[in-house]
Length: 292
Image 1: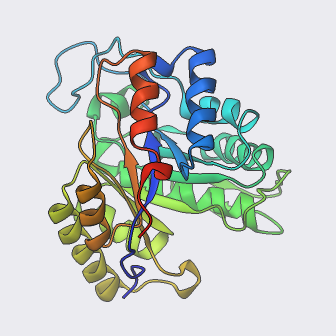
Image 2: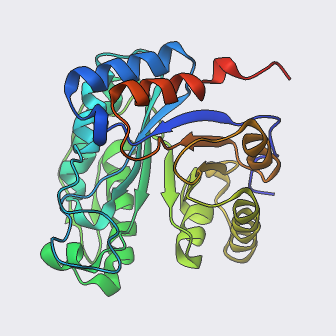
């Protein structure tokens, strides 16, 4: 098995503090410090650089959604927190300049003392790719190349990369990340996304599956690894899941663990104010879970 054995109880993370009631900086700081005090393992933030302001069946979000850039928001929290991991869930790799992004992420890992987890995906809104001048059909190939180029900048003594979309040599960038390597988590449920996780990443991130669906996706990841091979240096694959938005019961958490999930990143319900968000964080805290 490439996936780590099932756990008795998953680690608990918190999703999407860069939107809604925690957008104001004071509120973001309050929620994040409370989460750290209560024993949450990680904070996860996704991104959309913009959203279509015309109806789009592939974009369920309002164009007026307030969504702070995750790298900026997590960098803000790096100076406020001290233990909790800071995770992107996810960054849209094809839309980002890999050299600029590599610098931003290595800086975040440096300033946080090595607490970054990099969740990545290839994007699902064609309008976004088109506005960036990117061919939607080849976005995944571009994104995979962007990641390989960033790893070169982070890990190689003399960074150099020659690909179809990225080409550089005679460059260097410091400070390097504290972590060697920065753990990379691939998002997405398609066969291509599962193969990417199985063959190139330290983890996989599923958004919205039930425990039963998560178990089936873990099985498919194992199949992809058996078919295509997994480099030994990547180690066992860690499975992260965000359940459907709203409350998550202890029975559901145990069901996710039984499905092979190592981390559950809870997603507060839509429309809550700051008091409601703080109440959610308290009610889902790891410290409330009985000993087992």
